[in-house]
Image 1 (cartoon, helix red, strand yellow):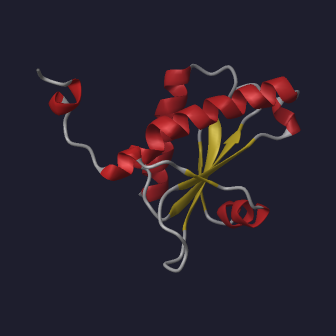
Image 2 (cartoon, rainbow, N blue to C red; image 1 turned 30 degrees about the horizontal axis):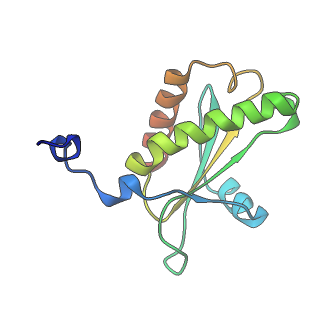
Length: 128
């Protein structure tokens, strides 16, 4: 009996590693001083961590009150979390922190496939 997992192409272990979450303000501030890649749907900030810091990919999300009320902010952050979960394990680089910042009236309403393309373009720009 052939399993679907056996037929799947080989993937790196990093593609299945869970993303670390940025929770400390200092991490967000360090990312804000690093590289930026503006997109139509959001702003990506990225920084390479030092060698002494933990490995893996870490990601943070933020939406200000300009995005809308609590319902709109939570919807925007859910969408950002999902595109990060889908794309960063494969296209992000270990040892980097990424912060996705929602844009008013765009992040919550932009087509999901367009948000994914925005993140692909932003990662290419950040990693040059």
